[in-house]
Length: 160
Image (cartoon, rainbow, N blue to C red; front, side, top):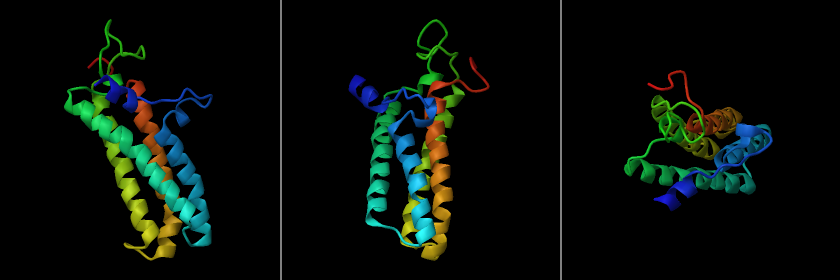
């Protein structure tokens, strides 16, 4: 269980703080910036698809380990009292953050599926889908950012 937690809790302490705190947030930010190219050109290149697959990997590794931890009865760090009435990050615990964490994970998963359909032109015409690509990718980055934020910081109802 400790190895699973170690894999799930990979974080970077960067000068930009929580904006680039997890591999998923970094991969989503790069994908967001990179999605401007296909939106302008009107076609998707092979390197973009490789990065999209890498983004899937950076989502699935903590996602699968998070499910395993949840099945083991654990909650997100900001919802768990680590002793003395504080989380392991020193904030008051907020149990409502566990549900928020899962909600943002679901939004990232949904965004990845939508991006897959947009770059293949299955729902709407390919050119229009590629124009929507940066918007969906930016939404996904925001959700990936919030996954990290919700895991660390309490919300508006700490201690309840």
